Picture 1 (cartoon, rainbow, N blue to C red):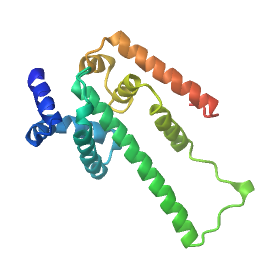
Picture 2: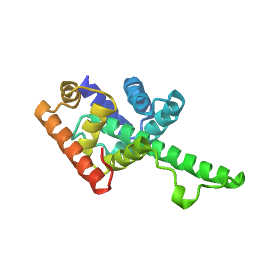
Picture 3: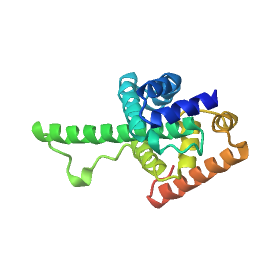
Picture 4: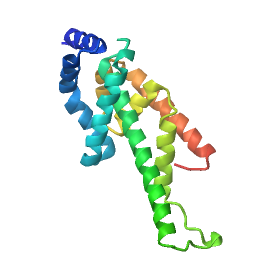
Length: 187
C-alpha cells in the first residue's frame, strides 16, 4: 500500500491531477478529523480542509520521501488550522474595534482597565509558541494535545519510538513553559 501511495505522490508531483485526486480520497477523512479536532467548528473545518489541499497541490513537489507522507500532510494541516485561527482572531479583533468606533462606545478609563481574559491570553501565547517549535515537536505536540492521542498511538502513527515521542513532548512543554514564564504568563 505504501508503495502505491508513493507512486501516486510521484505522479502528482509531475502534475497528474488524477493522482492528486486519489491522494485526496485516501487522506480526506483523516485530514478532516484532524481539522475538526483542532477547530471544533464544522463550517470553519470545511474552509480549512480546502485550504490544506490547495496548499498540498502547490507544495507536493517539495515532499522528498524522507518521512511518512501523512506526517508531512499532518504538519501542513495543523499549521493551516493555526493560521486560520490567527486570521479569524485578527479579523474578529479588527471588527470589534471598528464596531466600537462606529457605535461610539466609550472605553473604560485607563486606570479601570478590564483584566484580559486569562485563558485566551494563555491560548494565544501557546499557539504563537507552538509555531516556533521544531517541526517534529510541533507534530507530536499537536497529536498529543489537539488530537488527544496517546504516546503509543503517536509512536505508531509516526513510526518513531515511544521514547523519542516522550522526549519531543518533554522538550516542547519545557520550551513553552519557559517562554510563558519569561513573558510573565504563569501556566
